[in-house]
Image: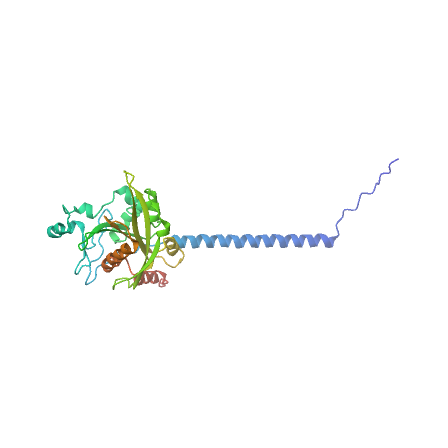
Length: 324
């Protein structure tokens, strides 16, 4: 016969243990509440910091000085004020369409290139891909603070070589990706010769940005024409980031966003390349590129705002507003 215990087990919890469990539960709750509060504050701080980092203002194009005209841009966002002769005094390089008949004859040009060939105007679709001519640019145009571009071809009147110069100005935004030959040329079907990529440092003549030297990236690509003939193409590029030289395109976005106190930002891309030139010994091409850039530098660098201008704008924007 099975004996049934009529007395159930004692499940009562001593008062001391119940109170302890209650206290521990409150502590856990308070701890979790504290963690959630910290996370919530951190989230709002992060959102605020991100908004501050992305809230940027445009920097106007440089105005004229006593010895140099200011930057002028047309309604299609092409910069039009760059000189036809480089350097301005005793020029060695002339805009292809500005060649005189006697120089064209001496160089063996059968005809003088037309202005639209020497100053290439981009169609709207291409400009928009480049990040130039968007609605925000139209809104900033009257304040001389839009993005702009320029593409020109210059002839070396000493040796008949032709150089293409591309400038692009981006301001007041952080979402524009710096276009570089390593992406654009590959997208066009060229093969990068990475072992021939090189960083070059050149000394400069006196210029508006106060740069004593400039760091330039040389990139080389192999192209194939419609007949299957292969040839090498060389491109040089660098940037002005808020008035300072920066050759690494990856640093552009970092430089635009990391300092949340810097509201006014810009970067300018400088790209140039020989055309109608056989790319043989790269050291000789590098030397020719250096000569061309040094001739263009005083006018070229004056198209971008200086580091002092950027600093003054940001210092002014960071000053506390006066109390009423």
